[in-house]
Image (cartoon, rainbow, N blue to C red):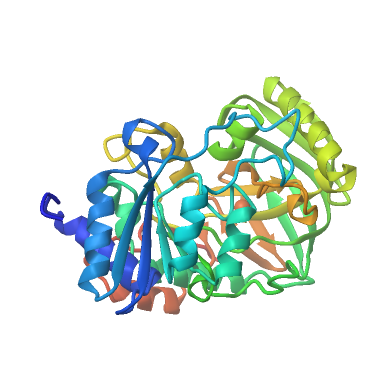
Length: 395
Ligand SMILES: [Fe+2]
């Protein structure tokens, strides 16, 4: 592309890391580079043309084909209830995107609306059907590419994440506490049927977030107690109709893995209504069941407004910092007619997770921060952001 601006050195580091260590581009591959038009003009799919151009150029430099596709994402209401759609009535991946995905060997997506965790089930189903790995490049603008968040080596985050998974052991008791009065406890379950382990690398899967940032979720069994939170990750906050930062804390009372009481201010009222609507769609048992906890593993997951003016996007990034821990509400995966990846992420900052005798996560401290295997990976790239944003725990 003749009119592509020169890439700043910091962004070039990020680009190489993403293409070589996350996408693992090989010569001869057909790579689909996807972005959404609205993101250039203030829409949710935040992106800039330079980043997409640099990604395509980097793919071609590695001897692969790059097809750049700019798309209009379907319009739909932000709030998904009270009449929750079914798989027949929900919005779909645009047909031309799906056709392009079928032809590709790898997808590098810059489309916030297409994530395999927070939006349509159709996306992960399609990735599996087409055997198509998707890199979700969240560093979608030049300034985000240059941030410490994006420049933290992908292999370092992967190592931290993997080692955190080793602390989550099926059959052990777990607890989440927070100075705000949160106290939940349960037993670590075996994990989801699709992946009955807590220790796995993302590089083997169809979903490869870049930068990565969350350790595997505890599969809770027999969870009970109280969970008090005052924020929710922005995507499902907007789908439910609450602000990402609440006006008043919400207190959930949990018994036998299910929410039995929702108390608080205006957000508690909206959340109660949503869960009631969800119960009509999923059934009572699945709507009120809780999932996770888990939290962030990225030492530099804070960006400044000069790096990203969009507050929701900054909050989304901050949810990957070890300071952040969250639970999920609802088991949307068990009902095939429910179209969404239900990702009601109730977030607390500064919480503590223990599994068995080990404190896994306490505020911005992680059990693996001083693990020699983590430090060895960090030492390979002394000029890049490392583990200084997290502190070790003394058990
Ligand atoms: Fe989560």
